Amino acid sequence: MPSGIVRRLRPSELDLFRDHLMRLDAESRRDRFNGAANDAFLAQYAARSFRNGATVIGYVEDGRVLGAAELHEQAELDPPTAEIAFSVERPLQHRGLGSELFKRLIAHARALGYMHLRVTTHPNNRAMRVLAQKFNARLSFAEGEATGVIALEQTPNGGEELAGIFPDPGAVHRPSA
Image (tube, rainbow, N blue to C red):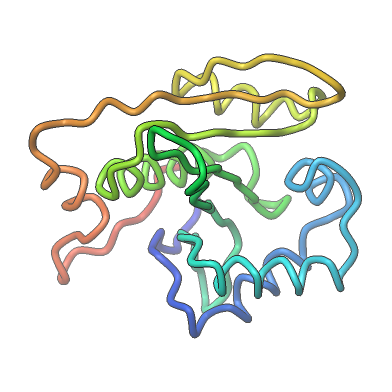
């Protein structure tokens, strides 16, 4: 059972995010980036994500990020839309961590006023397809990709989402197994 915490990563934790991406095995890298990704690409990607204002929510255990959910604004789209992405290191896959990261990312996206979330993966990434469908993504397949959109309903009380993102300081959130 995972014993770490799920929380938003600070910009000063860029190295932790980069190191997590670099620890992904070849299959996990392919699943996350829809193709091969070398270490140089991953280092540039991590830096660009933080530089461009992406939200990165991480699963942190023993000072290391072992899973991450990313929210990348697509400012050119209307209504407000963001692209989402997930990565979990192999030993923690299929233990509910992706669902927990997804829940936290959706709550954060709602709190920021996003109306749509987009997800793109390759058609063979069954875990991501199942996860996206669990959260009501409408998936379509074209040109070697599976793409989906999750329509977020805005709730009148945004405080509920914020409570999930900014829990009581004394409470530590631990994902379920």
